Length: 251
Image: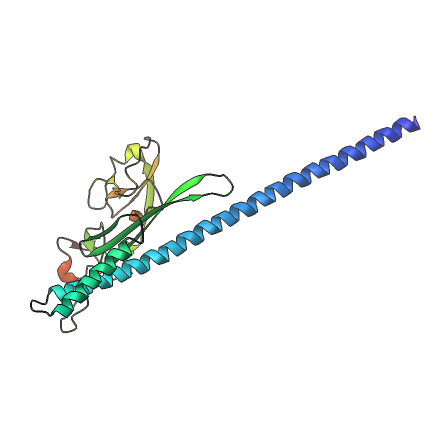
């Protein structure tokens, strides 16, 4: 009987040791998975940040070059030296545009740069597509001899504001099902149309889309650049058909 008891005890000890070894292996594997995942996430964020800085610098430099070109264009009688400067500015812009492989548009006094690239996740071996954008208004300078009344607008907004701190400039994003977005209306009673950046995807009626009260686009991606609040400072003479904000009275 003592021999059998000893064998049973030895079996129990071996089983306990094996269980501890398995638990340790699983714990170590999970720990390594988390470490690699975090490292991949940090690397992705670092790449996004460095790309964002690079794109903004390029856009600002292109905006400066466009300012000089327009200044030369306004001179009706200029020397060959000025013409050389103008050609050099255009050459610089062309070189900067070629730095990024995506569309770099110069339209409506804006430099609009879009860059799309693939990033491979280290853990899941899955490739994700990342799109980044930099948009800068041309450098136009300011005539200090004129009186300006500055107001604030957003790209898709229909009103202008007298202060950046206006409560209506605070971004409130709500989610709704794609099947119901056709019934939704914004503050001006307008229907929501697809965002030009993320709204062309095929989605089901139950998919959540994102809208804002003062915008007129719906978005399929909460991180879409079109849903971020871009406040633009302009002279009140440039508000066009925009109405004064009911909250800050538009000045």
